[in-house]
Structures are given as C-alpha cells and as structure tokens.
Image 1 (cartoon, rainbow, N blue to C red):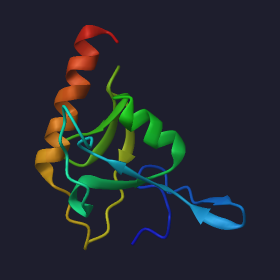
Image 2 (cartoon, one colour):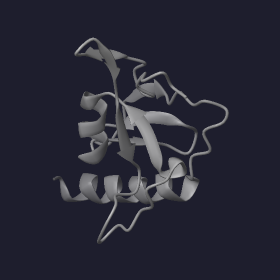
Image 3 (cartoon, helix red, strand yellow):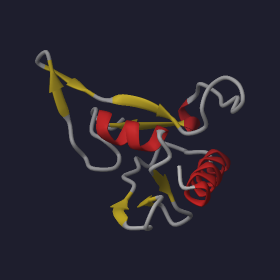
Amino acid sequence: MYSNACQVCKTCLQYKRRPYSEAAHIRGLGSPHDGPDELPNLLCLCPNHHVLFDGLEIFIDVDGYVKKTHGGDSLGRLHRHMSHQIDDEHLRYHRTLCELNRLTGK
C-alpha cells in the first residue's frame, strides 16, 4: 500500500537490498491498551518515527498532521493511501496518552 515508505517522512529504507518499514500499532496490543492487530490500527513507519510514535513523542492531530508532543511543532501531514481506513478512535486514544505524557513531563 505504501511501498514501504514511512507515512510521516516518506523515507523508504533499504535493508539487505530490500525495502524495509515497520508496522506501528496506533493503539498498543495487549494489556492495558488491548488494541487490535488489524489494518485500521496500523501505520507504516520508518524505525525512527516508529520509536517516536510508540514513545508518545509524536501524535496525529484531528486534522491529520503529525505533531511533536512537547512543543506541538508539526512534522507535516500524515501520508495516507485512499484505501487505508485508519480508525479515528485509535488515533484519539493515542493522542490522550501523548497528552498525559506531556502533562507529567515524562
């Protein structure tokens, strides 16, 4: 769908002569998040943005922009394929976690 290009920066890494990307769960799997392992709960990210997303350092705002949790700087609009239906509820959940992270300073 994204040809292994990061939805944040459009980087397409080559690893062992093959394209490489990571599937990032928007709402984490397992307890306490209990997110589903399905396409509406996934983003295609490079390793750098995957770490930042999982670490609650970046989030997707309601208008589809990728923003830094601390400071609110925009990294640009999330690249989305028309057939990729991302569940807004999962994005909202992730934003809530980022806001808690920002408020606690962790």
